[in-house]
Image (cartoon, rainbow, N blue to C red):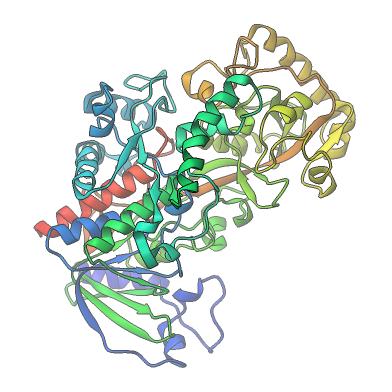
Length: 596
């Protein structure tokens, strides 16, 4: 019965090439098998216990769990480097009641976390069922302890609050649910260190330290804090250590443990298709090898899809929305092209949240010209975000996924894509903007290359960027008046611990996120609805088994990370809401595989 259902679903998406020209709209590795085999013969097949598609944090965790349970896993990674989106991420994990935070004196409970989960995420259907939430909260701490016992070194991200700190069960100013890797010396990896991609942040700082580093010359307080952060790193670097942190630190540690456990990891090896038994069980995958040949890897215990979402795959983004969509705005790696999601769809797997993403307001960096996730920039005093009418439409400092939702919603009634980050000289003299330090240090380049605009008056600035001048002037007048009291009567900016975490406590006003825009020059840079990856993916149960539309599990097939639709629904509960589930779900999936 299941085989017939899968076969029926497969016929709906089967590729039927009429020539040797690659089909438009499909990633290269999903071109039909016939086209691939026309130029390269197949190589002998092989059999393993477990096949893991993708080398991000979820896949590497799953492999470690498999090795310790006596299974023989193989990881395949289509790129020449390891880590996927995980390696360029902030590297944090949102794990309530975890043993690392508890050892630091943080009082938390799964009951409080579930209450927060229920209020913040709400009822979004089976993608975040009660069973899935309980499984995540039960097994997250177990996964952390498992890795710790293998030698993984964790640290507590002190002071990092939940993203909705006013909700029932949330952790506020003290933080407590986000943990990350300690700074890791990649010399321990030997030749394997070359498999990490280049660092996107040149120093080994940690998540809760970033707000201070990005305003290090704004005040004496920030300078002292930043210096205390940087000096130990500089000293260790002088001694010859090659330290990495954040996502690179996470992947480096996981890779190190996998090398110690002799995990079989194969680079430049791509998923072509999943294979099925007569009974409808997923038995492995057809893959493309580095030399262009193909082979079938049979996995007797199952396949885990851990290959990310489809942030850079335009056809799926345009199909599911929202519009307008562009792969140019995403901060996800270019390899995030949806092959694993499509492979599941070809078998008739159910999907959820395909129209959503881990949104994050994005600018094009005024120095590099590349997409930049604008986290701290919009949360600081002396700036606002406006639409084409010159009006504000959001709390600029709110959680980034909510900001993306608000930008798309506003664009339905007024042009808000792009929106505009409006700043005065106070902002530009105190805070980083992308990789540009401060306007007074590089006053001409951003304006000259067209990524930023500047003018002596707000009216002239509005004309340059094509928005309503009177609307902008009126908005700034009202905003400046509210800055005097520190109360944002329109959107509530700065009224909670999350907003304040990225504010400037030394700015001198009553609200660390608010400051008047009154000092010329005035600046503007476009804000786009970028993302950190897609939220939508294959629907899974509490064991991470991939489900059909009728709720029946596809035997032998599991999905984790951004390949699976997110348990977080349409929200972002706290720092590490992608990696926490990815790694926990990898742990969970292997536990289930080992028992069946």
